[in-house]
Each structure stands twice: as structure tokens, then as C-alpha cells.
Image (cartoon, rainbow, N blue to C red; front, top):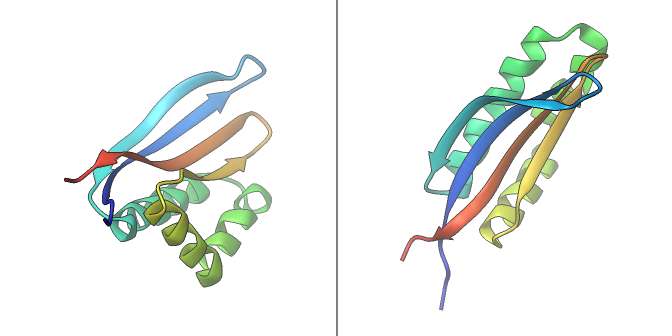
Length: 103
């Protein structure tokens, strides 16, 4: 039997030495592809706010089709997928996780 998941997409900023968390964005998604589309958009949004050096990993990830396929496979298998960006003061965790079955 094929198990289908729904997904919860989330972007959180962890600021300063205390790591206090600030929820930036959330979105439910019904498929891994829609979840990845959301993730790509948020990675782009965060990277646009960073200086060029901290944004470089995001630029690479946004163009990495092999990694996107790996993310889709992981999500379809019910695994959480996360991408992390950081600058001097803030760590951004952008993630997608399964939240149960669609059936």
C-alpha cells in the first residue's frame, strides 16, 4: 500500500547567542513537489536579505537539481528535509516535514 503524506513547511530564524527562535513563514503542502517549490521560494527570499558571502550556499542550492531530486525522494519517503543558512548573527532553518497521511 502506498502511503501519501501531507507536509508542513517552515522557516525559522535563530538569532544571537541565545538562539531565540522567530517563526518567519509556514505553509502546508499536499505534495513533495509543492513543498519543494515553497522551500525554494523561501531560500531565495532569505538569501536576498543576506550579504553575498552568506548567501552563496543558497545560490548553489537553488541551482542544484540533483539535491532537489534527493529532497523530493526524502520527502516522498516520509523524511524531514531542511536547508540551513547563516550569517554572523542569525541561523535560518528552512524545513519541510511530513505531517501524517493523506488517506
